[in-house]
Length: 388
Image (cartoon, rainbow, N blue to C red; front, side, top):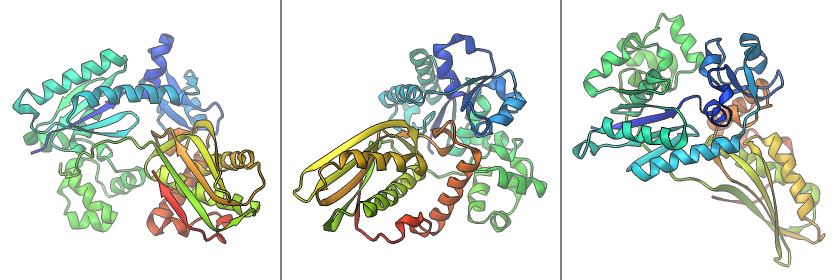
């Protein structure tokens, strides 16, 4: 039987801000953009009491909590502290997975032969708190689902262990919203059927759940019964993602190259979002017909959105292409990657824009990336070599 530990930094963005500004402690704090159409990237528990939550439109958040202190946010600082926590875990854990910028899964199976797993987990948590100053909660159980739910129950800044023989008792009274993977749409559908608790959901025949919720229904039913065979995936930091195109014939068709850059950015930006990554550095490479190679890069705020990356890429190409010679190869690279999602990469993006990207990505994931692309890329058929 496996032993899985889940660790989640509490209100991570706010906690980092409070390290440098103690006046924020105990106050309702919202991290996000300043415009009414921007979204909430993170908020304190004091703000949550008013109904504020992540991804909520900032206008609504200000209405619910007019006394909240709004902070623009510093993704570089958040990344730095996230890396500090990861380093502490990496020094001590046999196998760990960085699930996002503020949470980790650890497989500590067999560690109880040498010392108690909960004792070890508690000491690790205290080390993280003392070395970073950040509050962090943990859950310990036999699989990812149960320990993640346990972490949620232990918050804020707490610990919880759920032994195997207590899983059913632990899960039964909890709301179905506690199950990882149940979004608002699924939650509303199940509630309309009179299903409110995990206990009720667990007692429904799995075939019925699958019929109502589709293929994901069986996964949700298993989670409701405390079943989750998903392994902890050993963590390795991906440093960059790129794509290059070598032309069959050297070209000086700048209009075509600009359209190709759009297609290339669209392709690897989608890969970023699929892997829940953000980039803060764009590099454009060109190789002339005489094999001279030149690159130029630009640092930008963390993002994974095409509409930000495309103009940056075009501008870099305009600057790096100076010799007016035939071009043999063109390349685009995104580097300085961090883990993050569409909801937090741009503090000034609107909910409508975020929803648009999510809808486009759902279509691509279901039918293939090439099924939905910008019109400028339709007539371009060249070979691209992707790299990591």
